[in-house]
Every structure is written in C-alpha cells, then in structure tokens.
Length: 313
Image 1 (tube, helix red, strand yellow):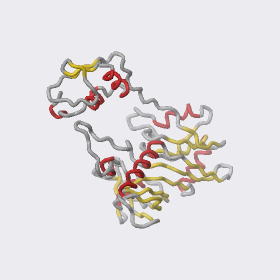
Image 2 (cartoon, rainbow, N blue to C red):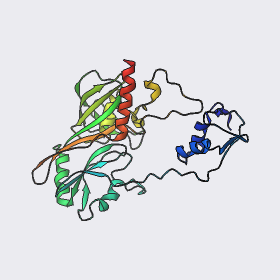
Image 3 (tube, one colour):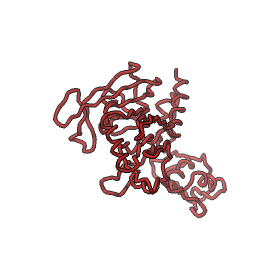
Image 4 (cartoon, one colour):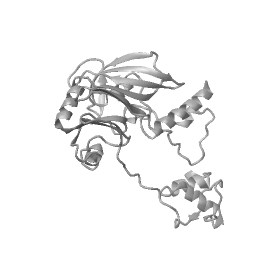
C-alpha cells in the first residue's frame, strides 16, 4: 500500500481500489471474511499501514452498471411543439467531433413522425425545459419568438455569496474570451465582438454563504447567465469555468473532519442551474406555460444546505 494512504480505513481503501464494483458487494466480501491484510482477515474499520498487502477476490462482485442514457421526459406536447425535461450532462446539439449527438441524436426516437427541430439550446450541465418545434413551419414560428424575446424563460440557480438586493438587473456586454476558446467574457462597455445582454435577478432565498436565485434573461447570449453572475461576484455553484466553487460539506459543517485517505466529494456533481419555466405562444395562438420540477440532485443539495445552514445560524 502507498505511504500516502497510511491510516486509511479498509472500507475507504476498498472503495478506491475497487471503484469498478458496487460498494455493497465490497462491504459484504469484507463481512464474509474474504478480504485479507497481510494474510489475516480484515475488518471494515481496520486502519492500514504503509507496506500492508490487501488481497480480495473480485469473483462474485457485481460491476457498477453503465450509465445508460434514456429518453428525456415530456413536459408538454401539442400539434406544433414538444417541451422536454433535458437532463444535466447531455448536450443539446452534437459536439464538434460528432462523438456525442446529444438531444439532437434522440429526436427520431422521441417522435419518429414529428420531424422535431431544436429551436434553442441549453448548456450540457443545465437541466430543464427545452422546446422542440414539430416541422419546419413550427420551428420558424418558435425561432421568431426567441429572436424577438417573446419567449419568457425562468432559471433557478444557487450562487456563491449573498447579493444585497432582492431584485436587480445585470446589464453587461458579452463576447468571446480570446484567452479561452469557447468561453465568454463580460464588459461594462461595448466593444468589438461584444453584444449587449440583459438579465433580471430575483433572490428567492438567502443562506449563510449562498443564495437561491430566479433568473429571467431578456436576451439569449451564449453562457449569459453564468457570465453575468460571475461578473458581479456571485458565480453559480459548481460552475468551474467561471469561478464557481463546489458545494462541500466541509464548508457547511463546522466540525467536519475528513478521514485519512478519503477525498471529499462535492454534494453536487454539476453546476446548480436549471431551466425551471418557459412561457410562449403556440402556433395556434394558445399561451403555454410549462414548468420543469427541480431534479433530485439539486433538491438533495438544497436540503443538505438548508439542514447545515440552519445549525450555523
């Protein structure tokens, strides 16, 4: 065993060494006496020392299931439009290399006869409402609504720090970051390659070190919400591209102690940004208002934040 892991518990060591297997199976094989340390039967809480030899048989252990990608849930459907609940971690359109087709690659399966068209985008790690037009005429109708800002979108975000105001605008010009291809920078003044961008922010809830916000973009620039919030010092939690910090238990729990050899895992594995609501006019003139419930990972992160935040007040 590596010297750096001296003092690590056997249970934690097995999770590192046997990451390809289910945790429950690893613990069961220890309880069954099938894990040996220097030839002797080991126990879950036993701490290891430099030079210890740990042996266990992988036969009978169940590999972790591959993360399959199912079809997204449908939030609303009419003759002209489909609004789906895009999961986090899925691209909207194919990547440049064509290796990941994202939602675009699922369109023929979602509604084989509908000729679904993507009319706007969500970032890979943003979940929630994604609007798809049925056929070219519907796609043109919704594209025109997005271009004229007739579609009203509301996002939910958890950010670092606590803004002073309850409701306020962010007006900053956005353009490509020349030092980081694919990323965006904000400017307080117009300039070459910059486009005006407007976001309305409403603080829904304040915590000790974070705030839960409702965001209403009035323009649709790339990475607009992420860059706007970062530009005022309140980056979205987990958004590492724009300075967002991970949500860690050690930040919330005053007496938190990390066990030797264990790397702290964030309470949330992606940025906290969710397309909560979309309001638009359907092709037939009907006004449509669609809500996407907060996904389980964001709900659990909020519950943990609320629990530990309350203890510190």
